[in-house]
Length: 154
Image (tube, rainbow, N blue to C red; front, top):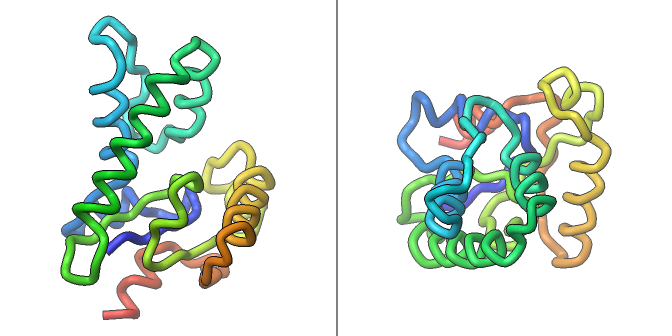
């Protein structure tokens, strides 16, 4: 089951203790496949926002490779992880939000900033634009972490 949740809502932390896939790790895997072996991979998946790292790759001229990685990532998500009978996959890529079977948003800028997000207003605006463009349904987290919501739905 694919679940989108706002960056900074505890997806990676939740998956340390529960079975499932971290979408950032899957995207990173696809990026590593697309980039040449000599390309430096500074992203460590330790809370660093993968979006900032991808932006830096765009600035270095890797846009075609990033596009290829996203196509492969979308294929993996839509063909291997979609459906209630599939393993849980939590991801925070707004670009692929339309694939999510459930969407959880945190709209409190101050809270996102406290959780280490550098551009909370941009995150929120991007999410709302994607939701409006694709007429997606979502729930608001209201300060909760994704673990709080998922533990209450079982």
